[in-house]
Structure formats: structure tokens, C-alpha cells
Amino acid sequence: MTQERGFFVSPADVSAIRLRCATCGAATTIPIQKLSDERRIGLDVSRACPYCGIPSGINADTREFAELTDFSVLLGKIGETLEGRNLELSFQVECGEREAG
Ligand SMILES: [Zn+2]
Image 1 (cartoon, helix red, strand yellow):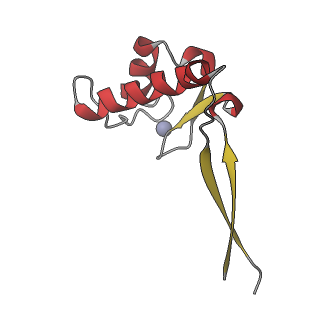
Image 2: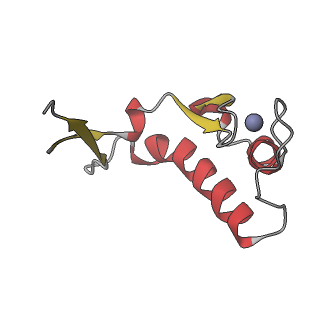
């Protein structure tokens, strides 16, 4: 049986994003302040893993590449965009937890 628990995270609460190699688990953490650097994000999402050498599968000049870099840049700016506004935006995060038995 799975017990679901959720909570909300505001963009202001996000301090970094993590890019993790699905093959070997090596990870890069990018501070939120660096997300507006589209060139850096582009390099991080499109390079091969520096540990196992497996390509990310995201190639420059593709729709996926543009979506990932655009999302990162927007995530980096959204807290600033909403600052001082009468609007709060948050992400709902679901946490599944296995019960014993
Ligand atoms: Zn790897």
C-alpha cells in the first residue's frame, strides 16, 4: 500500500537544480542564480557524462534542447518576476512512501 503525501514548493524555495546521469548516477548541481546562463545550461544538458562517457541524448539545435534551456532560464527568473506581486506560484510535490507489510 502506498501512502501519498504532498507539499508545495515556491520558486523562491528552489536553491538549485540537479542534472543526474541515468546510467551511472553522477550528478551536477546548478545553483538557481546560474540558471539564467543559457549557454552554461545548454552545455550541461547536451554533454556526455564526464564519468561514464554516455551522451545525455539531448542534442543542441533540437526542440528538447530548447525546451530544457528555456525551462531552466525561466525557473531561474520566476521568483524575481513574481516579487512584489499579488500572486504566488508554487509547485505541488507528491511524496510516495511505502508502508511496511
Ligand atoms: Zn554517467
